[in-house]
Image (cartoon, rainbow, N blue to C red; front, side, top):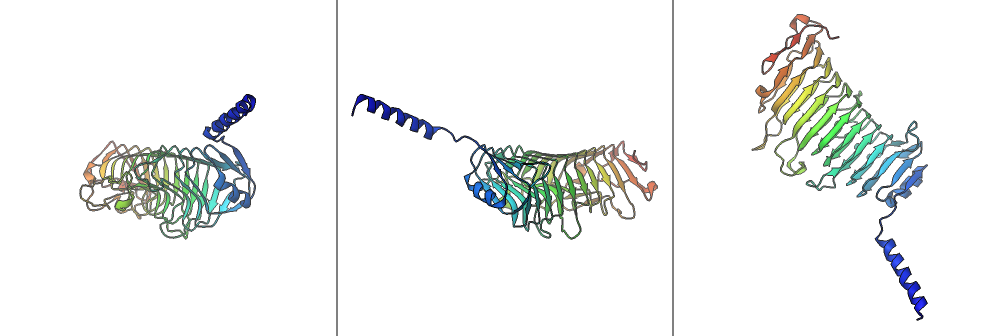
Length: 360
């Protein structure tokens, strides 16, 4: 072989080696119908941006193990509609996922499901969900609008959820997460056990500036009841801790908020309007030995309007909780049908409470 030919072959080999060792270049992909979407899903790679044109699409899309993926509407003013199926979208182990401007309805299980692929001690980080519309899920049974298992550094904002079976938003073993500026509305014919729920080892969760209207039996549930095999991290001895619920508006529902096996929470600056049975519930549904009991909760600066003909007892207290560790400060209570009977019966004395005055 001549020296020139040998040099050319060597250079080609080096170029091939360089190409094979280089990361794939992320692409921006547009799809305009269901067939194109079905074709592209198996070919997505790290960092891709998938933009979906307006139109009707079937549920059942699934994506696994793709970091930094973006899935969004091609036209945010006309989001694509994913209708029917068991789930609209399922994302498993997709860190850095961004999901924007999509509409889902009519799923029989969950609207959108995101999880850690069963790796309970290896959470998926950096997921962002925004401007999603999820409706008519279930309609009855433990079926969720948005279900998140084993995620951290999660943000859900400006989403709308209406009509679901189990939870509007279900967090199982999630941490360092914020739900903000969302609207959650219950509908007739749906079982709607809870609105947003944080359980199974959830910690450092904030829900703020959201509006919840007739959002079920427990419009917000800090804690819950989780089977031992589903806690994240494995072996966690709390349903939830360090939960912040602030500046929300909660209308209707059987109660405004249920504290269920949570240890460490704040419920501050919220507006509560006419729950139909209780204002709060304090419960301990997980009773495993060594499990932290429900308590260490601060309820302050809230405006609470109710009807005394509906709310005979402001707080429902279950066995096994620690209601004496709840602190009440500076709340405004009004029984609008009987203002003289506005002062609540609480498990610990309230400081600087206001009773019977109409809210501004």
